Image 1 (cartoon, rainbow, N blue to C red):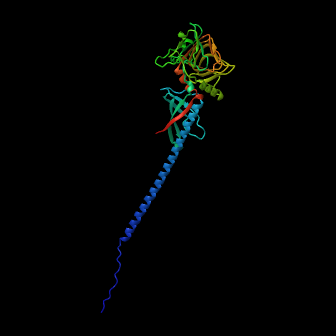
Image 2 (image 1 turned 135 degrees about the horizontal axis):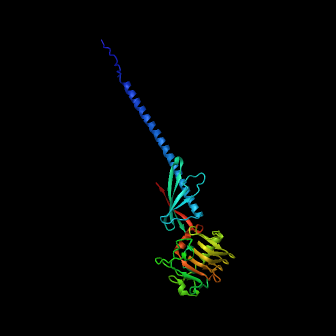
Image 3 (image 1 turned 180 degrees about the horizontal axis):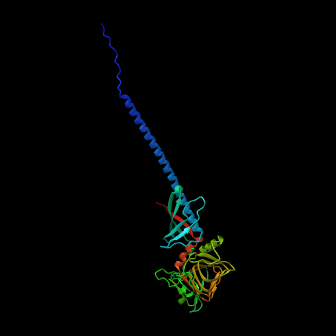
Length: 362
């Protein structure tokens, strides 16, 4: 009799449902972790993006501030700093911009300066830039001698004994300590440690009269050289065409260009600094005590005359002269002075200002 075999029954373990729960919980934890990480990364990215945007905005605000300072320096009289003596410059912050309007201008080297500008972005984010600038004065602020006569037929009438006329000295004289000095208080002594210029520089042999040996000094006392008449004529024409001058004398702190036009006379007394252009037909009448620091340019029939006393520190230039240009019965000294000429870099109207470098300040 055949034996009946029953089919095998599947055995279910009672702990399988617990394993499924564990797996589900692990998957849930992983998903929660991934979601949290995504949220954190997204939030962090948003914060980084916001901070980058705010930093970039602050940087551009600082850039705008730098340009505003440079614009101000180009268009306003400024007393530029010297070593150890910084200058504070305050500009206007235009509507819609946010930067520190006050900066400190520091001396770096001759004609070179630096300052820091801070821009403000959203959430008070700040960015600071240090900018470096330089001033490029025109070549016409240099001098070939205490007196340089670039026209034809140069003639000089020096002092006779202790009487009237003028003395010319190419040794380097410092300007007086007091820019508002008077009379003999304006006298200085040449600095022997500095190189001297010729007392009289001409393009052809000059006619000289008076006590030349006693009243002409320099190294050498006289010299011949090429003419710079075209250069100075172009300079004067540029000043006149673009109205880069004023009718009063500048000061040592704020030197300026003064033009004496045809038919006008400037009564030179007191103190001044900068450049005086005595144009064709103009006259500088030196009366009383006169102390000037800088460059005097005589063009055409422009002339200097008078019976005053005093000193002109810097250089006197003549171009295209057609008649007697200097006629002094008083006692005037024409002293070469590199310090007086170097101050001409502070005449903003004729000086080029450039930004040479910048960097982030961390």
